[in-house]
Every structure is written in C-alpha cells, then in structure tokens.
Image 1 (cartoon, rainbow, N blue to C red):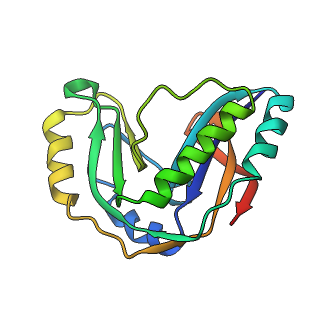
Image 2: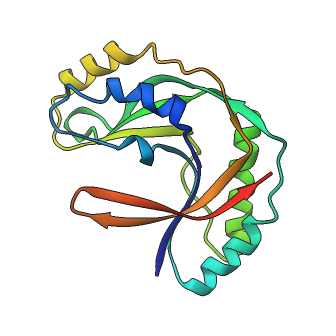
Length: 177
C-alpha cells in the first residue's frame, strides 16, 4: 500500500525565507523547508494497481503555467484542539482548476470524492497541546507574510512515510504542463 498525495512543491527561494519564522512556539513540530508544499489532493492508502491507474489519469492533466504567492498565516482547530499552523496561498483560479482536475483524476481512478472544501495552504507546523494565546501571538507576529510570486509549471505525485520525527515525503512522479 502506498500513501499518496498530489502537490506543488514550494521553490527553495520561497521556502528558505520562511525558515526564520519557524520557531518560538512551544508544542510546534516545524516542517522542514524541503517538505513544504501545497496539497492539491490527498489520495490516502492505495494499492499499486490503483496508484498506477491514478498516475495514468494524472498524466493527462494540462494547465497553462501560472503564478502563486504565499500570504498570511493561520491555524486549523480551536482552543486546545489547535493542530496546524499554515501559510495561506493567494486566491488563484488556475490553482483551483488544477486541484479540481486532480479530484477528477482520482474519481476516474476509482477513488471516493474528497469530502472537504479545498483550502490551499502550506503546512508550517503540527501542534501538540499548544497554549492558544501563544498560537495567537505567533500568528499576529507573522500574519503579514507575503512571498514574491513564483511560477508553477508542474505538480507531483508524492508518497508519505511516517517516521518518529513526522512524515517524510518522496516525489514519485512529476507532471509538467
């Protein structure tokens, strides 16, 4: 079984300046900059046969190249159930279309529809029992985040492997458009 997702990798020149923000919050497990990405569709645990079908469907996706930028920060969860810090992604119709095409590819490969509304973001940290006031202070201190635009002309199919330090990702296939 393979645990797979489609994503856009954050270029090094955009990710590296984020590194200076990834500190000063107790209970945060910061993601390494090489793991930063914008998920297009999480597929979950798949057999190799279904993964091959998914790859065939993803390889048919086309899109004109487009630009994105990161802007603002926020969190998922409330109170002591806060579990994720994220950087937002600028509103982008081409990004929404690409995510929709990945959803369509998943359905054609026999996967169930995604039940959640698509919220493009870059996970910066996973949180374990954080102090809500400390999370709010970190968000306030970093909320003016705005990256320069970066070009998107590809996305990847990634596998996720659980380790003691968190998930590790490996690019399995890259799709250029």
